[in-house]
Each structure stands twice: as structure tokens, then as C-alpha cells.
Image (cartoon, rainbow, N blue to C red; front, side, top):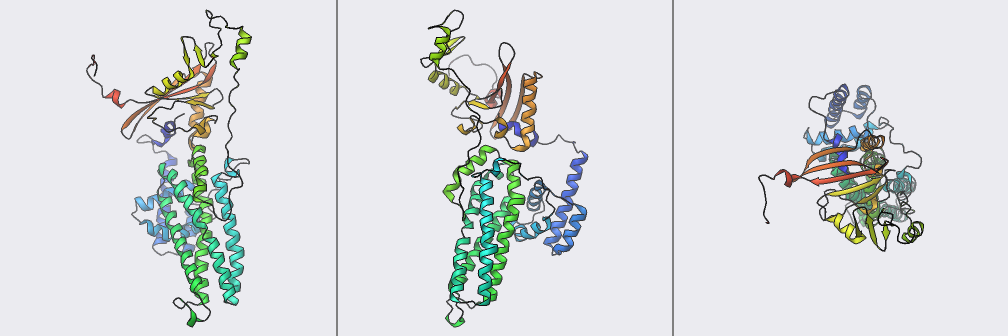
Length: 453
């Protein structure tokens, strides 16, 4: 089914539809913006956090996303300023983010190879390096800042700079999908903080490379061991804070937004960028429904008798590469080519909600990949819109509806989307056909045309 059905809610509430819930959410956003602005104006995190707990209590990932976007777009606060206090924001929210993202047992994101599983697996490796290995070696350097300790820390920092791959996958594979759904503020802020961490790690590596215990032998501007360790502690805290932001804000928000196909695309393209400290244990392969069982043409002939009875239509439907229908016979090549030449996009899901077919014309309105074949239609939509899909399919299956139409403007097109319940001669539900067409050229017709162009 088309992602257009996802937009039924996204197209917004009708004017004047300001329910109590919407008013309350607006009030919460106003309070949140005011508190964050006070942080930017220099208020202490302790004072603001106390007021936050009193006035707001718990906060959802969606509210955090809306907040950062509003700070940038509505309040005119520069992205750089939001980035500067990003860790302060995260500190304020700690302990208050709604725990609604705990994955169910067997959820796709808990399976090895899923991008979320890989991000979290890398975060555990980063934590071990930062909180155990680096912490131990920094203590040794603090007690005795000698050459062996310097080299040890430099090796650790070279390992930690592998986090660049982790951030790069996030920025170049995950962020584009979020931005496709209109989520820009959080991605801009986080990318800026990632870059700050990269610069900090590079600076530390440079200082460690040139550091000598004897300042007279140092190849860089004189820096004490304590100054160097102080910088390391600040940057490593940023690395640790980023793990919190990813796992409590970014990844839950992405799981609420992206479809399974989009996660699959991220998984398939991740190896090209590379992994941080550890690699996925296996390829993630989403579950697929098996292909429907079809009898071999020779078996069908044996059941019906060789040749069957052409008059009553009992000839086997598949015979020698031909598809025999009630009103004609076509080769499979002819049939597929004909369907792909229709000026519409077709998608068919069967009675079990499994995607079985889509046409593949030259100018599809909505992209489809062969990866959707065999998947339930619910897994082809963002989680927050699945209930719309289920409602429509339930109406079709129960016989309450035979069709449903939607139409929306899309860039230079006016798209008409139609859904039809497909039933056999006895009225048994067999599936749903989606029919999508750009009708803008049809809308522009006038007068009449009776001769060849």
C-alpha cells in the first residue's frame, strides 16, 4: 500500500480542531522552550531541572525533536548555540524521558545486523574503551606521565577515533531518512556535536603525539599533563553523553519514523562506510512470508486431463509459458510488459496482508523495491501510521467497504490513490489492489480532441 496513506494524518488537523490535548501539548512546548532559553541565558542546570520536573515531568522523544526544531526555526536560536548546550539539554532530560521505547522480545531492532542493534553494540564497545581502558591508562599517565604511558594513551585515542565511522553512518545513512520525514532540527544539532567530538579527538591525538614530559623537548606548545588530561575528560564526557542522546532520543525517534524497508537499506549500505570497534555478527534479513504454493502446470494437466475442456474454461491457467485467462491468453512476458506500460502504479497484497506484486513502470510515483515482496504491508509503513492501514484492511475484509480513495498534491503532480477490495465470484476476500495515478494532465484537459497529434 502506498506511503500516501501515511500522510492522511500528516496532512494535519482541520482548522479549528484544537482539542484539549493539542492545547496541553502546545502549553508544554511553550514551557519547554522557555526553560531551554533560560539555560541559554546562563541559568544553572540545577535550577532549571527542578522547574522542569515541576512543570513538565516526563517528556517524549517527539517533544524533544519538536523542541529543538522550534528553537532553531521559530525562536531564531542559531544551530551552533543549540549544539553548544546540547549536553546541557540532555542532562536536563535525564530521568524524565518516557520509557516507551523498550523493544519487545524478538523486535527487529533487537536482531543482530539491524542498524539499531549495530549502533548499540558499537556503543557498548565505546563505553568499554572509554570507561575502562582509557580511564585506567589516564590514571597511570596522571601518576607517571612518561613515554610508555603517552604511547598507550595515543593508541587508545587512535582506537577511539574509529567513532568517526559510527557518526558517519548515522549522519549519511540515518539522517537523510529522518529529514525526508521533516525532522531537521535534531539532526543538524547532533551532526554539529559529532563534529565537535571529532575535532576534540584530533586535538588530543595531536597533543599526545607532540607531548614530552620534559617541556624543553616538547615538539608542541608547552602543555601540562593535567591540562591534557582535563581536555581528554571533557571530550570523553561528550562521547559518553552522545551515547545517551542516541539511545534515548535519536534511535527511538527513528524507530517510530522509519519503515522496515528503510532500515534494510541502511543495513545494506553500512559496510561501505565501515563500523566502529566491532562489526555486525550477521546480515539482518527481515522475515518474509513464503511464496504461495502453486501447482506445476504438468500436475494441473494431469488433474484436468490432458488439454482439459476449453469450452468450460477448465484448461490449466499456466501452460508452456502462457497465462490463460477468462478472456484471453498471454505469455508471461506479454502480461508483465503490458502491466508495466499502464500509466498507473499497481500494487497487490493478498488476503494475509502480504505484498505479492507491484508494477514497475518507467515513472513510478512512489518508489518500490523488490525487497517488499513477501513482506506484510504493515512492515512497509512507519509504526505511527500502521493503525490507519489496519483500519482500511479491516473494513475491506469485513465487507464494510469495497473501495477507498485519497488525493493529494505532490510537487508537480496531483496524485489520485485508490484502494479496491479484491473478491472472487463468491465474494471471498482475496486481497487489496492499490491504484495510483498522476491525474494532473487529466485535470488540465478541456474541449475535445478527435484527430491524431
